Length: 182
Image (cartoon, rainbow, N blue to C red; front, side, top):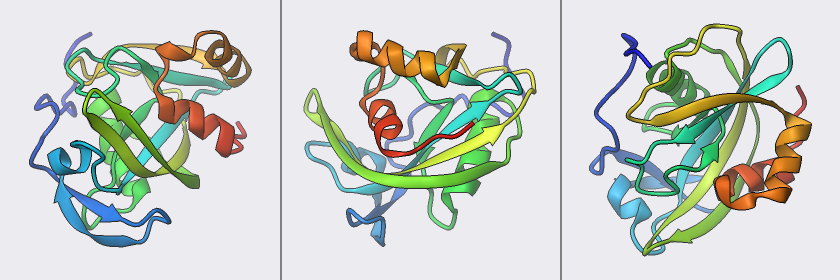
């Protein structure tokens, strides 16, 4: 995959400030990414964004091996944290450029809280679920993403039932909790 001018190749930034919040998504402060993910972590704002094409396929992203949590697992199109002074939609638009090399307008479809532990670390997030439509050519960021593929939502749900370990836990939760209409 060739590099796109929008790609941020710096990888995970452990000292990046994230918005901490309660389990209902109300902001309470900030903490570093490292602190938010260590042990049981601190609840923080995040998002997962589904990019859907005109054939109603979802673009899935396989997390790169450099990811500290759930590397090599399939995930939503764009997944990251809501940064200070940004909304979930603004953060997703920025990360859509950095991770997929495209501009997408996203719509917030709801949110949920979850905590999942992983090898002494965790995801402890209030996660917004966003949907955006695009037919632009994706040029994924190889630091963030190993591969991409397109799939119908019905087939994705079937695949998750048959082979749950190859998907991130928050993807599974989102599909259970949020009615994703394409």
